[in-house]
Image (cartoon, rainbow, N blue to C red):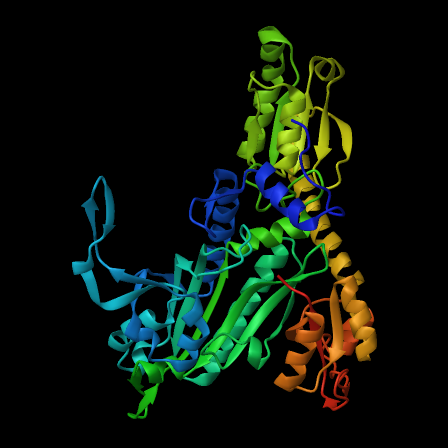
Length: 506
């Protein structure tokens, strides 16, 4: 299996698509802009989903499901919301087809009285339900999460990063007070940050979006921003404080403890299969996918090296107990004894699919009481002695933990090395060509923000509130609990209370 992956340095976009293809994560579908998620890709999504689901439930949330179709009139009730999604909505106008000359066409007699919108997000239909669920302060808070698919009619698509249909989770909560809702918004942002760093080994900066980058219908949007290997930013998750906008639009009131009718306070928050794109671009290399052990569908591949059934049987007497011990220790193991493929093909396949550890065992290894161990993250190989199965499992479990740690540290160091302070617009225009996070003063006006975007293609990724950029950068941003440094906007020269993070982004 020859390596058919374009080097990053030659064509980063093609490299990304090649990694997706060679790792068998997804394919383009017959429907433009949609994708088929293959078993390898879906297995990674399942592990993401399962861990996030645990974290949501640990914070008191429950899962529910709401309809895929939303009456058009619902989107009209919240003006900012409908304006934000109007150009991305898929609309159902008829209810059936009819057979014509061996084919089918839309039956004109089946036109719907009211068109239905294919779910771009669920705030409107959920808040219609909440109107009947909420009467009293005793009914609050409502902490609901939904795992679903959504459709946004994107014109320019890329597998996982931006597709017309994608999988995600969307949390929708209702609260009696503004303080509770704001606390919920920041709590879920912290859940996302923790998941990104501890499970994905992907360092992120947490912050608040500017008004022009805010979710349609929100009062504040909080985000986690990651930096990819090509120096572009990726918005990896968002958490929105919706205020009372949707409660007022759908007339959702509750009787407070003092007996007065008040509007409910709301939040929503979500991450999607875009995280798989972030995973690829954070860790992978020119050999293919690199997956952190916590998300790897297969953590250890054991490859027997044999000629004929007799050698295979001899090797399996050692390999099978080792595999069973590893599985018993809770590790995900694939004993690759397929006889239709040569070892070289198997090595390349497991490498392209990002299996964190590969063990090769041949007759010579058995004679020497050792195996060859290869780390996917560093591509380093070493021979290690065959130990008692339980001891072997313990040592490999520790090594997987080390790989998880090393991947995070490597990505964090890269983010720190590609985050720079700039003080003038000329410097900004030069540095933005190099990629990375630029920390610069901004006067807070949408006009300045729009002009910088138009002239440099850089956007304000967030007004930072957390993260670890290290040393001077943390000090400049006040991320260590200090006061942000004030200064002058790089473009207008007007006063600025703190630096914000600019980058070109996906």
